[in-house]
Image 1 (cartoon, rainbow, N blue to C red):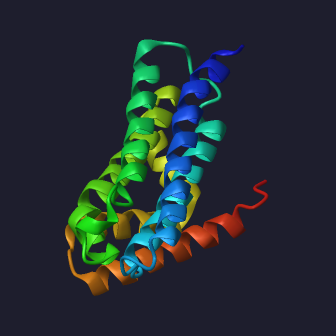
Image 2 (tube, rainbow, N blue to C red):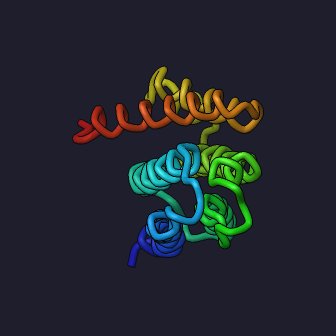
Amino acid sequence: MSAFEFFFTLFGLILGLAVAVVIGGLSDLLRARNHIPIGRLTPMLAVVVLFDVAAAWISTWTGLSDVRVAHGPFFAALVVAGLYFFAASMVFPKDDGEWASLDDYYMGHRRAVLGSLLAANIGVVAIEAATAGRWMAIIDHFARTGPASALWWLILTLLVVIPGRRFQRVGLGLLLLIDAYAAVALWNPQ
C-alpha cells in the first residue's frame, strides 16, 4: 500500500460517510414530506454539500498523490473530512417535528453547515499547498480553476454572512449552477 493509498483510505471513508448521511437525509425527507413543509433551501443545500464533497474527493485524488504518511497531513485530512461529515450531518434535522418548515431549520443551521464547508475547502487548498511544499500553490489553485471558482468562494462566504431567505435561495442556486458547470466542463479533464 502506498503512502497515498494509506492516507486516502481514512479520508475517503469519512467523505463516503458524509455522502451517505446526505442521501439518507434526502430519503428521510421524502418520507416526512406530508408532515413538514420541505421548502427549497434545505434540498438545495443537500445538493451543494454533495457536489462539494465530490469535488473535495476529486481534488484530493488529483492533488495529493505525493502526500507522505506523517502526523501533520493525516491529522489535517482528518479535520477536513470531519468538517465535511459535520456539515453533512447538519443538513437535515434529526426530528422533523421540531421545526415549522425545513426552510426554518435551514435558517437556524445554515452558518454551521456553510461555515463548515468554507473551512473544509480552505483546508483542502491548504493541504494541497503544504504537500506541494509551496504556499504559492494556493494562487496557482485559483489561477487553474478560473473565475467560476473565485465566484463560488465569494458566494459561499456571503451565504455564511448574509441571512436573508431570498439571498440564500439565489446564492444556493448560483452555487448549484457553478457546480453543474464545473461537473460538465471537467467531465473529462485533459
